Image 1 (cartoon, rainbow, N blue to C red):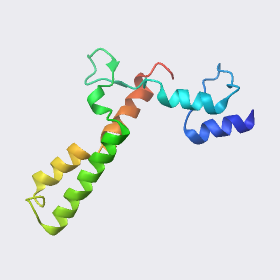
Image 2 (tube, rainbow, N blue to C red):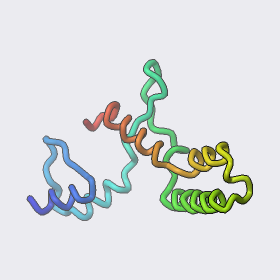
Image 3 (spheres, rainbow, N blue to C red):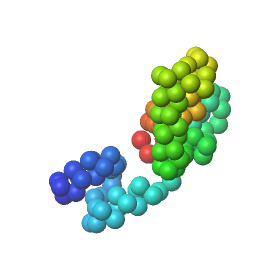
Length: 117
């Protein structure tokens, strides 16, 4: 039981206090990774709670492409090519190609509004 719990913890998948540990930890972990995200988003305090928008949850392949575009634009910024050294271009590159801030907000919302807490 302890080893199964540690495996799930390393994967970042945790159990509710009322959950029993699954017998096949690997199959359970894979099913959790493919399950739809319970993360929720709320634009303001009077909005109804709704699932996090799909356009803010790109696939891993899309994220990798966005990261490559971000790095290429940063390289152009350092070399002062294609107008990438302007403040507007820097902000647009960060906003359009980095998911870090959006992911932080998504998981902060999940911690507040998620029904799995």
